[in-house]
Image (cartoon, one colour):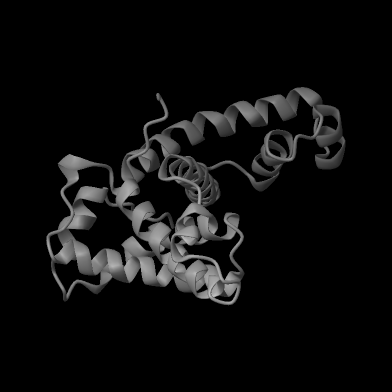
Length: 202
């Protein structure tokens, strides 16, 4: 059974309802893996990244319900990235005390928000692809061998002849598997891009 993804607008509207636990859980499930991945790429340990992720989401919810976010002034991504940046900086400041760094050095140790935004987009695309592949398996009539051959060819960068031998297929069958999977994935990814407010045209 596939996951139904609400648009960001619908999720944000639902977050004003303090009793709507389902909306918060969906928002958290959507964005926590991305924040976690960004934090890990900045060198945080698994535990520190998990703490930063939770703190970022809590701070986000507090500020959003306090009316501090104006969607007309910027993307949701930029706001969350900014919150995460300062949560990570706080962590760096604690560590800096043991190294006699000045407090502002902690901020300078973190990439600027443009760079962080690029990291966010990369991780967001990975998360979308992960969901898309799961949905491809759960909701289409494509068999596992077809999907697995596609993954080996496109993501593992295996040669068609190698994939064909491994999966007991012809080389032509491998290319057809890729085509069938791509046809299904385009629609799934386009819908998920809309939910995550991703613009791949830029």
